Image 1 (cartoon, rainbow, N blue to C red):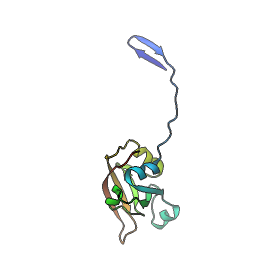
Image 2: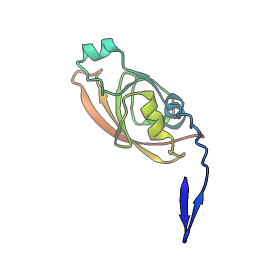
Image 3: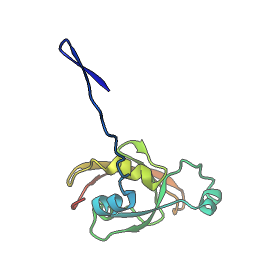
Image 4: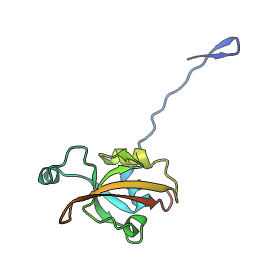
Amino acid sequence: MKVRRGDKVLSVTVKLESIPLPDGAKLARELLGLELVEISADLRRRYDLPESAGLMVERVLRGSSADRAGIIPSDLILRLHRTPVMNLRDVGLVLEQTQPNDPVVVEGLRIDADRPFFWTGTLRARGHK
């Protein structure tokens, strides 16, 4: 790579390294108290959900901010920080810069209700990453 510094042009070599993707499942569990799984094809068909429907809550950790907010297993998580999440990779990329006590806006869909409904909540990130 060539770099201009003042009136001089310098040639420098830059070594590129790959950075591992953040672990979305781990971050969701540690920061929000959510254990998430990707939505099965059967569930997508049953509720006529698009591919972009997000992730399903498999478990909510007792005492977590997700638990206090009333999120339940079977809820679908559609967006985190206003960013659509379609898989655990997306969750990791969205949550990787989240620090303990940061607010995290979570948008979801409760499908296990008499009438399914969309909901939005702000969770407080917890613990250490």
